Amino acid sequence: MLDRSKTLRLVATALALLILSSLTAGAEDKEDKKDRKPRPAGVPVLWRAPDDLPARDLFAGPGGEEMKPDLSRVTFVKDETGGYSKKFRVKDAAGRVWVAKLGKEAQAETAAVRLVWAVGYMTEINYLAPCVVVEGAPDPGKEFERCQGGGFANVRFEARPEGVRRLDEWKWAENPFVNTKELKGLVVLMSLLNNWDIKDTNNKILYVPRASGGQGELRYIVSDLGATFGRVKLDVPGLWRIRRNRNDPEDYAKDAFLEDVKGGQVYLFYKGKRQDLFDDIRVDEARWIAGLLSKLSDRQIADAFRAANYSPEDIQTLTAAVRGRIEELSGIPARAASVR
Image 1 (tube, rainbow, N blue to C red):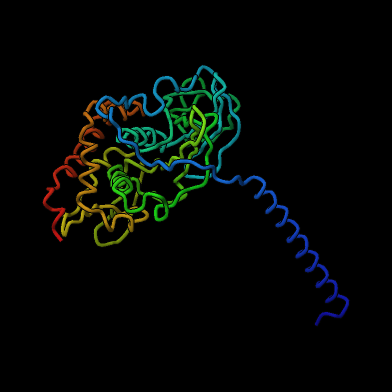
Image 2: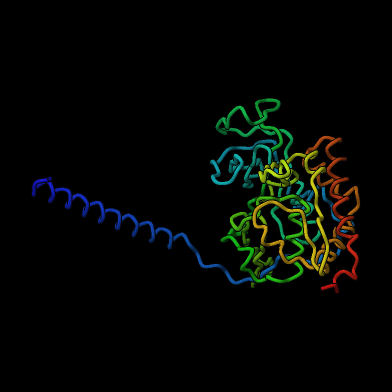
């Protein structure tokens, strides 16, 4: 047994630790509140009708040629934490800030953003650099492909434009667009891209001010589309083991997409996260997004993959696979919508 003096010392130590913990937590709470700014007033926007869809430049993407990074000199600012991929915050030669993503997700995300943007959804602005030297960057390890001059191969640059505020995440189940065809269309599009990493933490609200002043926009985007263009199916039938990958054109092309249409509902062969989102996709919602996607030419689809520096063979494979999925959706008969 402990003597009385030792017991008192232990109690005193415990109390001291409790007080210190309370003070630290209080300081952190104050710091959090100081950093946490209220969400600005703005108009929520998920999708905007792409009236120029057949003419959209999927090679340049949502930022166009004018927003491309100046890669003549890129300097390291700091590491970016979180997510699957290695990321750096960098500045280009024009002084603009970007988040550079290395590794397997970079190509897939570059192409996915362009296809999502093409049919009217709000997205990040990104570009793919086939080879870039990042001055001052730490060595991320041997698993990352290098290129000429000690640079990094296939780096995705995601813009951090001045004046645009990155706010909190938005939830698939709680947002201003629940039960709209626009949100359901986005869910279908996630399956078409084989985005198996659907989760709230991959979503972001961007506040974009109006150039003329006044109330800006709260843009609801899927901010991480790296887990796309791979496989989302069961690896071995009967074993109930799911193996998923990303950025694998051959696997993407072989994966199933449309599973069934019955009772006015569309069932997609999706085995990724948040499968509950696919429980209530109506025929008219699937046909709506199919109508937009079908306006894209093969050239536009190929340009999305060409912008991501895929090989000519992979561009052909991916373009044909995406076109095939669009045709599956477009082939759903309109009369099936009324069947219950």
